[in-house]
Amino acid sequence: MSQMTVPLLDLKPQYRQIREEIRQVTEEVYESQQFIMGPRVDALEAEISAYCRTRHAVGVSSGTDALLLALMTLDIGPGDLVLTTPYSFFATVGTVVRLGARPVFADIEADSYNLDPAAAAAALEALGPASRRRVKAMIPVHLYGRMARMEELGALAEAWRLAVVEDAAQAIGSEDGRGRRAGSIGTAGCFSFFPSKNLGGFGDGGIVTLNDDELAEKMRILRVHGGHPKYHHHLVGGNFRLDALQAAIVRVKLRYLDQWTAGRQANAATYRRLFKEAGLDGRIGLPAEGPGRHIYNQFVIRVPGRRDALRDHLAQHGVGCEIYYPIPLHRQPCFADLGYEEGDFPESERAAAETLALPIFPELSDDQQQYVVDQIRSFFAA
Ligand SMILES: *Cc1c(COP(=O)(O)O)cnc(C)c1O
Image (cartoon, rainbow, N blue to C red):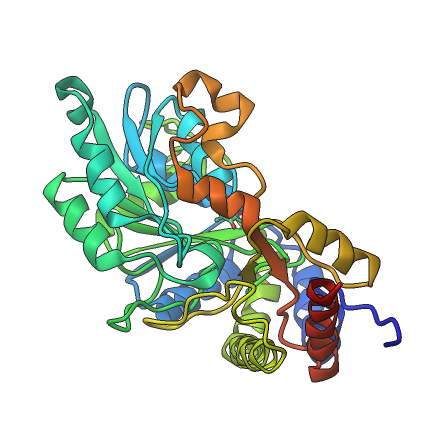
């Protein structure tokens, strides 16, 4: 079999598709010389809130700042506790700790890699009386583009009176089994326009979705250092603004998002068929299907025992792949003082040791997918 190159993500074919539109809207920003906030950010906010089915959207400087700003708006601070998953991108927990709050981890489900509602309930029950009073919020992550179990987690949050901040950085347009969109269910939904996300800008950017009018107003004030009116500060915020250039670009890409999502879903279906035809569906774990709409920010397989060897084999044969994430957050050296130990969250630890993300971007060809599966088959045949 001749060597091919299949990158994990190639953004160039997407750019070629929209190049003229991008050049036009960016040119308009250059001519306007209006770079910070303004009508393009307002328009993007209106379009994203319509897309995510929320009353408000607040454009921000990154997905990380979306999380930070949402937590700040909810007054999460020193001594507070925030329930979340140890199996996510660093920012999910980094933002909690930066505010002086403490994460309380609960393990994930083996099939979805998302926060397990039963584990979440047990983690809350295990808290002492003083700690119970300090739990303020929960951050479910819709990892890889599949929604966490928002029905059960929402009920738990209600019982414990917790705010719910959805980390929807990988889940724009995802829906749960009831057809509710990511970012529309909790108190706030946090999205990223990092270039590798399904709706990526040409640099950093993000947005927060929410339904509460008062919280939205407070968030808009905190986004500009807490000044309201300008130079009058009752709150200490930060510079969390979104650039007009990013807003203009993301607006163009938003019009293609559903088409690109359909491309990712078609590629996922193709992988499932090819793995089955190759007799590999028993050897590797495939992403769980349903309920709801999975947008496949990543297509992640599970390879018990031989993940690193498969990764090396694929890399040698020109196939891009990546481990999201190799070290669960409770095992990160910077969080050692939280007192968690190896073995505390076995499903998260197992996922960190067994998962591998394969190329799934919309423009991936059938030949490329066949090549990826052929390489995996030859690995297991050897
Ligand atoms: C990408 C990502 C973030 C952070 O977004 P940035 O725009 O890179 O700051 C947060 N959480 C998750 C789950 C992510 O995938």
